[in-house]
Length: 367
Image 1 (cartoon, one colour):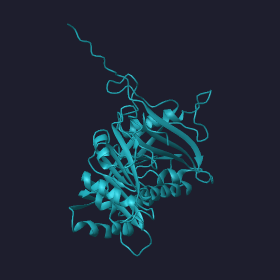
Image 2: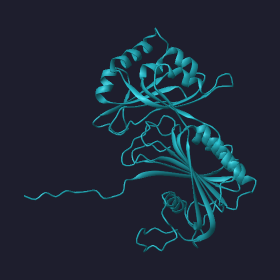
Image 3: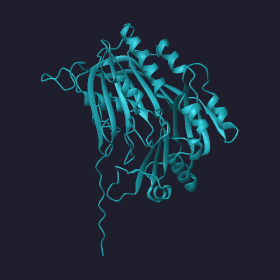
Image 4: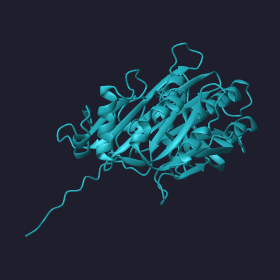
């Protein structure tokens, strides 16, 4: 008796949305893109033509923006009236369950807009007794469900029917998790660290800072691009946006793009046409990074380019979301599938134009 095992060797599919616009255009959605991508794991900046990160940008990377890891937090804590009034309604709170794999565990998040997102398995969902929707990733078998609880509603207070139903469901299931947390208070009356004081008396808490790393390149081939054209020219004067994006991914992964395509280690090479740059710097930051941090970095890069200090015609800023986050942009459901793609890249030109690349997994809804 023989058994034939069929293996699908095709690479996992993903969705890539590309658009070009200008930061000066009133209809530009660059700020919305940054602000609605709530849970960021890494920010990577690539500047060709520079041997070192410019000081004005390094300053923004170095600005203190600590985050916290709070362990074994029951979800009932997140609907506590005092917690909602002090932190959810008076600032931007980002909370994401830690070490929960979206494809096989229950996962949770609190958005800065005040919604508590529960991505739970069928058994948990039925025990919760709350209204939700089947996950878009398995609607046929309905193995997982998504419940959205708006913590900012005026009627979501102790004693009200909806609040008590949520409280009873969370108490019944005894759901808890470790949470990554970042909070930016409104105004200046409260300090960001006050949220740590709220948890320290009852839970184990850890303070963390983002980790930075710099990689320098020499004699690197760069694809030639035209800021006004995403597609290739008939005469082959520049590369397409997709070719450039693939090249950037290779550089980010440490793949040499200067070798001939028959090179033993990698068959990839820099697309034509290309040009040589004597130096380039790639600087990254990893941790739990709120959108506000990304925004200040992007503004610093824009100012640097606008003041014509750069030796390069463009700079690339890439932001990676957590692969196991229950959402990608805004409240769009995110799944891991094969790779958990959940990232975006701004290719920023001197004249304030930009290309925006948004990549998500096979089953995710396009941003």
